[in-house]
Image (cartoon, rainbow, N blue to C red; front, side):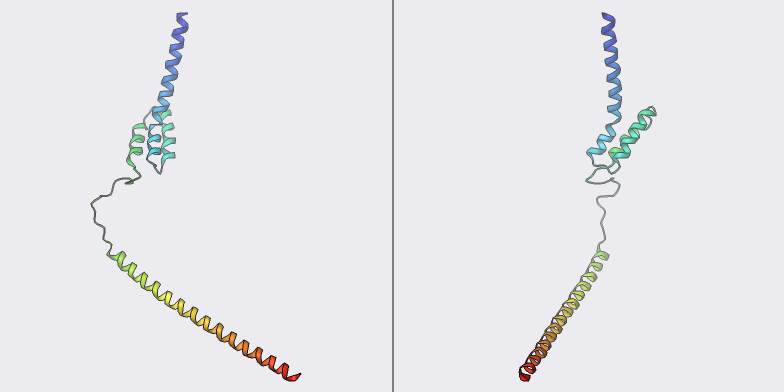
Length: 139
């Protein structure tokens, strides 16, 4: 009877160790998933590869997973760096001027189109009334 208890404990310990190793190797992937890492699938695959390569890659996977944060990206840029936006502001002003010119041209084109339509409609009505007058006069 004691042999069966010892065998049960041995199987339980072996299964727990096997499951524990798999869970530990999935930690970098879970970190990547929590941080919304752009390469979380690669981390997951690399974790399984590390499991079969005697855990050589695992510390590097941990570092790779923890380097990225969604709020600051990879974190290699300086936060105190001053960005020169003068070139962008000048380009923005030029683009605004071009947009205003294009809007003015569009409005002028639309006004001339409306005027032309009105003139053609007036001339059509004049022709129609002269035809009607001719037809009434010929009766």
